[in-house]
Image (cartoon, rainbow over all chains, first blue to last red; front, side, top):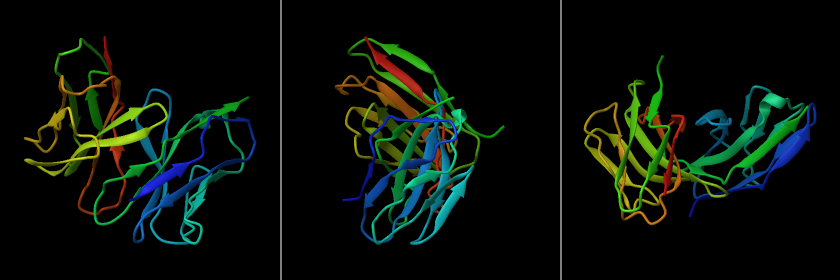
Length: 112
Length: 114
C-alpha cells in the first residue's frame, strides 16, 4: 500500500543553520507529493508540492525535489529562522482523489 | 474571510458519552475530510465526503459517524464505541474536482475523555 516515512524528530537547529528533513515514500503509479506545516496550536497549511518526477516545489525559502529514482522528497532550507519552528508533514496523493496519506511529522525547533 | 471553522476548540467528555465536533467552511469546496492526529502517528483519515449527501470511510472510521446534509457543514460524532477517543481532530476541505491535493485545514478540536 501507499505510505510515507519521515525522519523522526525533534530536529533542533540554531538560527541560520541549514535544514534537511528526509521523506521517502512507497506508492503505486505516479503520486503527487506535498509538504505541510503545522505551527503551534494551528491546523496544517500547504507549504509546497510537486506533481511529477524531477519537479521542484518551493515556498518561503523551503525547497523539495521529487526524486523518483530514490522515491524521496526531502525538505530543505538554507537558513532557518526561529519563526520556522513547527511540525512538518510529508504527504502523498495517489490516483484521482484528494485523499492524502501523511507521514508522522517532524518537529523542528529553531533556537536564537 | 474564507476558511474553515471548527468548534469547540477544547472538549471534555465522560466515558460513554457521544460528542459532536462541528466543522463549517465558506470556501465553497465540494470535498471535506476529518483527520485524527495522535503524537507520533501523524494524521489518519476518519471519514471524507466528496459531495453533499455522500461520504466514505477512511482508515479509522470505527467508532465515528458523520453527515453531509449541507455543502458547508461536515460534523463528526465521536461515539461511545470509539475505544480511545482522546486526540486532536482536524477538519479539512478541498475543491475536490481538480484533484490538486491541496487541503485547507481548520485549527482543530482537542477532545479529552475523562
